Amino acid sequence: MKIFSTVAELHASSGNQNKRRILVPTMGALHAGHISLIRLARENAGKDGEVAVSIFVNPLQFEPGADFSRYPRPESADAEACRAEGVDVLFRPVPNEMYADDRSTYVEETILSERLCGASRPGHFRGVCTVVTKLFHLLEPQAAVFGEKDFQQLAIIRRLVRDLDFPVEIIAGPTIREPDGLAFSSRNQYLNAEERAQAPVLRVALLEAAQSRENSSARILTTVRTKIESAPLARIDYAEIVSADDLQPRLTIEPRSLLAVAVFFGKTRLIDNIHLG
Ligand code: PAF
Image (spheres, rainbow, N blue to C red):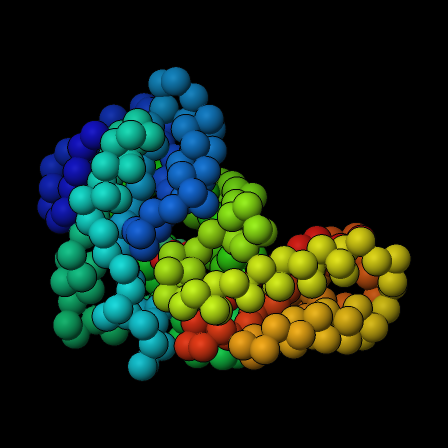
């Protein structure tokens, strides 16, 4: 596995232009969800292709006062996990490699980013779009893999790629879960024992909604909210039914309707979603 920490090292290596390269962009603290994305990248790269993983805790996507400094950074465990998965290229730049102090250029998607997570995390998706643009330029992948847990990020990246003509195919990886249904997330480790014990209520509420024969979004959302609020430590940020394509609210269940929730347990905000219809 080749490890690059600077843009200069990456440019000097310039890769093998004929190889299909699949990128898995991450912020590290790799868990089973990331590993499944890396395996999907490997399948997609084929035996002659290359899997590249980037690990960069992107300061631009943390809103002021958010958890940027306490975000976990287990560097050697992450490198080991990549090696064990047969990753070909690991790009893990230091922050000042990626951003000049006087940077003044950003990439912003202006419609899908406004709602849902964007409403409670101003500037977050601008930070994501800016760093993903840079990673696409630096690593020049033919395809990139993103998880469906972050469905809004996935929709925004698809829009970014379409609107700015990136020659990069976007591959979606399914959400991977703990045995009790909690979606893997690097933020799960912030939960204390009591919060962790209550957090699977998200999955229970989403599954119940998907299994109900109800067609009215309002009625489904009432049931979902009641279920989630039955966990005393849960504080709902949003629960919405939207189209998976344009992220606009839907009043009734249609093909490609998505039920998405964001819920705080203490200071930790968890998200999850499920397809309905
Ligand atoms: O999903 C993430 O981990 C991050 O938002 C990403 C796509 C790596 C950009 O920093």
